[in-house]
Length: 512
Image (tube, rainbow, N blue to C red; front, side, top):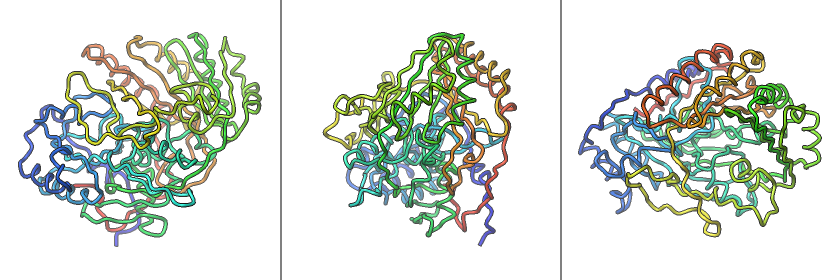
């Protein structure tokens, strides 16, 4: 038995792969092994190699990128296939990389020096060069218990599909915002959500997991079975400890809520609104979770007041000081259903009568992204979980660049630093679509998992840019991010994990 001390860097170091610019031919032995590993007569339909015309589409997620080129992509439809695929990769001398969802609400390693956690990411770390990608998106079943308190779900399900299925049982799960985000990718990163200040991160609402380890074992992880492993897979980074194939979730029926959207269509209000938001929002009642979106020449605040009324939210805002800044346009509405709240800020900025709510954007199919230019698109049984709702339109792809920072409770941003950051957002051109999406944290709910930021996170600052096909323009965007990193990272500080180190007993969970 190895001593109970778990350093994430040991696992992470083994998951840093070389980046090559050319696709190598797929070894025939790997393709043959993969074909045999996939059950049923449709295995050839679920394998994409570098020679297939669907390869570019299959290796891309939301982000359009030409840095990562996996050797082969296998689409799983049965959890029993995963162990065989891991062995195929090992026999071929390459890595097996699980993929679920292609996108991530935030990265838990944002301020940890030298760490890059592999999972499901905007940066395409789940489709790495010369690897066997195990795509889990078609493991998307939802089995709800008779009392509607729990559900066992396929670990590849996307959040929109999960919410759609649970809506049929008049319940939901405490999860993230974007409908195309994959469930296990979200959980590997902890699980940002718009109810978290009161109810905790998404990882707090997982009861157990089934996963396959590097040696082909299928294990149960829960508070009573492999508890260290259960701790690690919730917030300790995706794809590091094994391939999760099923999750048991604690379900919650959310109360009707009030929502707010405030917009300032004037560049001169950006700093004052951002300053006041960061001073005010993380200190509000735990039921209020909110964000501020800082653009080149405008700014917007969105918020969800869980279980509260329009009048209560309006009173909160009247005392905030936000409404005295510049010329705000404020919409405060109440009696929002859960479906309405899920699409708030994406489809609508108001609470609507139930019969006017269109939650179809949540009813995503497994391969939920738009076609890339003239590339052939990979499809396989792209069936939504609801046949009564319209199917979601494909989610657009773009050349995303992003970077995240955590502001900690004992190291808040000074005014000069904040003003400089706001001014830097204005430096980029309109085509960049640059914005800062900054969320109030200060979580009150307790939880026991590997997520490192629960105690200290005061706010999370994410910056995003839509990249460019023009190499010169793209290089300028990349330099902007490098300069932002050099300026802001020292200000927010690097962090040593405060949680006690733990070791997952006798398992080699890195899929080598």
